[in-house]
Length: 244
Ligand SMILES: [Zn+2]
Image 1 (tube, rainbow, N blue to C red):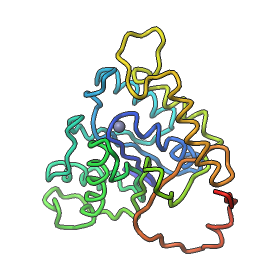
Image 2 (image 1 turned 135 degrees about the horizontal axis):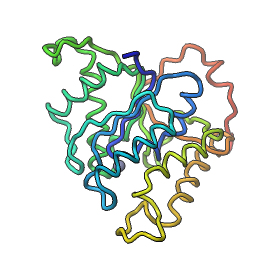
Image 3 (image 1 turned 180 degrees about the vertical axis):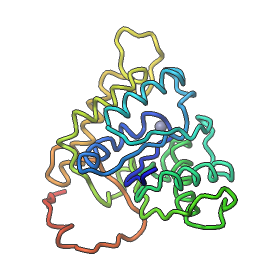
Image 4 (image 1 turned 180 degrees about the horizontal axis):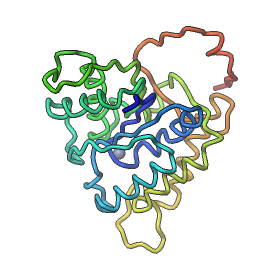
């Protein structure tokens, strides 16, 4: 398989859509190869079933124009960074060969999200070690960077991506997960995501991040390692908001 440029990894089948679908759409439009790996099938979700959620994820993948969407099939609500999960993820990383990975923030209060972040960081590192799971016969792979989305308000983003042009399409991808969101005629129990104002709140977060770079809508990421910048002039001559 041709290597991916960017792989987004989320614990549950709608995490990536909400946090970084705009960036994936923008990168696709630039001609990059994009992919999503869902760590679980979301079977612990209050609403929807694994089958419904798999169909919704497929529909969202089409809207995002992904080159690949896979599922690691770890148990929802029980994501742990252990030998089995690391080996499984190392195999996927070596198969898909992403240059960069987007995923959760290590201190996310949802344990699946936090453990996914840790799992991704460890697997991204181990994928480069020739002798780790060497008996599986895959080539080692070096992931250049892991960037984290959905972090606390006290953390300053490392970079922001203007997604104004892709904002509507991103929301189409989110709405593909119909079982999870507001449905006035449904009888499903309420969740944090299913309120009638949830999309408005999500949009407000994008607008806030957009404000930081003088854009209408943006997605934000944190990178824990120092960035190796080849051309600071090219990188830093985009508009920023001096009052942000
Ligand atoms: Zn989640």
